[in-house]
Amino acid sequence: LNGHKIWITNGGVADVAITKTALPDPVGPGEQLTYEITVTNNDDDVGLEYLIIDLNAQVDNIGGNQGEPPTPTVLSNSFRAAFDDVYDNEPTPVTSTSTEVKVEVVEPVLTISKSAKASAISSAGSTVEFTLEIENQGPATAFDVNLTDILPGVFPPGSVTFSSFSAPANCLPSFDAQTNTVGVVCPTLLVGETIKIAFNAVAMGCSGPVTNAARVTWTSLPGPMGTPSST
Picture 1 (cartoon, rainbow, N blue to C red):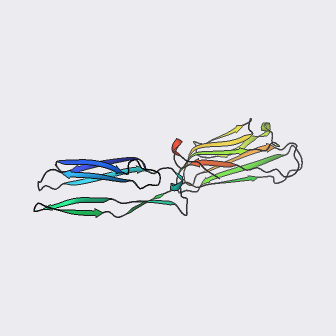
Picture 2: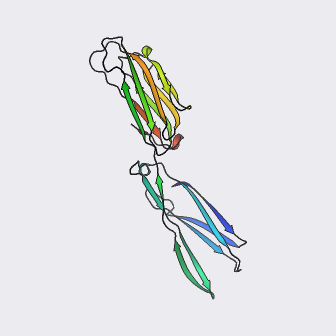
Picture 3: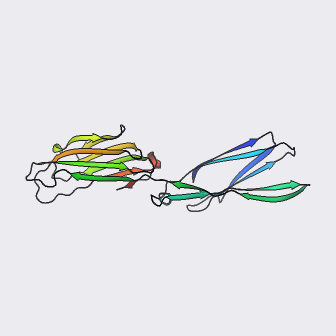
């Protein structure tokens, strides 16, 4: 857990003192962290008083938390309250433990496919149309989506032209002539959204099979907090 925040609300009018400790401190990777909150009620009136503790915690973006369907990562947490029940000036220790709350950590799953319209060409100078399609199959939004397709040298940079492009409005296609690379950058790709790009390239000076594959990377969180995954 990272970046925890705790809000404590005291109901009614009470003389209450609150302290909080973390055990162990410091905590290492994989160790269980326990927060201990001690609430002392310094008055003895008969008025109704209550305490609400609201804990927000951020899940660390580490390998152990990056399960994918059908086996997602499940994190669990429970809360224990211990207090002295004072009756006739005789304190009786009481402990109450909450039910276990389970949270499923979801990760986006992207698929990519590539096809060539002409599976065979008769001679150098022939045009081949390539089509790339990326889909976010869920169950979460993908961030910082980056498609790269480095074309073989038989397709000179000057011969590459885009024929169609469909994607969410925030996605942009590109071509780098120095590296002969077709690319698409997309800040976010929602569940069910697709990116489809088609481009033409002219084959020069080749004989025999020419193979090529594209690669897409993405993160489950935006910016530097994300951890890349790829296909």
